[in-house]
Image (cartoon, rainbow, N blue to C red; front, top):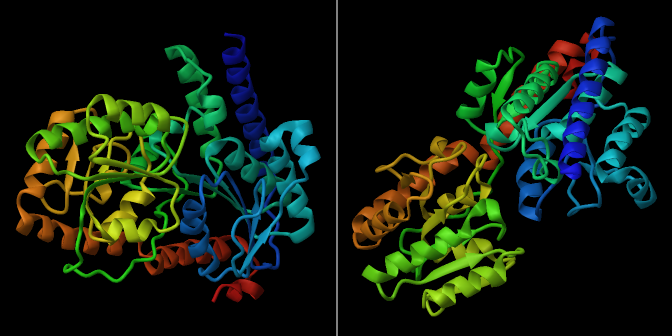
Length: 412
């Protein structure tokens, strides 16, 4: 109980401080400046694919340099500079606090044109505060589903069991903060509508993570019937995937399923598969560096998450011709159209998952048709060139709006 109260007070305090700084900063006119072509970006990158998916298009969008304020360097990339706070600082004021402070250090050292944060707390708040302090625009990237906005970031959000009154109080404060950003980026149209319904009038852009689309061949041999790719964490509800494999196995005894990824639930899930008698049908592949090759061998991508933003794993699967059968949550409906390129399923409805999957596996012509449509639809929305072009338009907009006219050609 004490931990929950402390977490709630911390979230309130962070949002209140951010709102005060943003409000006071807005009262002073923003100075024009000569652009440096740099942007400062901070956040938590959950895995290498997530990092590459989101940062690569930024580096190709015409900026000179992306300064990435994170805990530790990721894969080296042209146009990216890592600015990692020292470990002693993280131990002293927490990882989140250290990155927030380091955004200010980066501001003094490199004078970025834009401050950007993934997730509202702490990264989004840090970007907004830095932007106000240095008189520069700020951008908030809402990476998850709308429901995740009020809960803050995972390490804190899990500790809070909010009543209706406390939830409304925090929600009101969060939206006061969000309305101060010069730009907000969301992953899909549901999130955009959600913000507009809460009177967020500043520009809201729909930009997904990017995927490098592989060459697609409908002739490839696919020997994996069902595939899941992701963290073996509670929010993904992989226990439902195990149940689905069992249900499909009642109709198609030779069904083969692959679980790609690792996490705290692995042993528990293996025990569940053993109890259901499907260990022979289910491979736990762990973390892999050849995910694309595994997807190329797969027929149906299954996602049973409790909540999602826009699943990069699903997008990668679709570009490889894997047909999605996924929960109707988050922004997944932006990519998946039931009966056209896959199926959206009522969350938790194991019988419906199994029925849809069996219908696909037993009709090879329909599976091939959906597979080709999945490739086409995913490429149209999240191919790296498409995402890069969207970011270029955003950056051109903020340079035109906020920088000195003598240097507006900083973006190519």
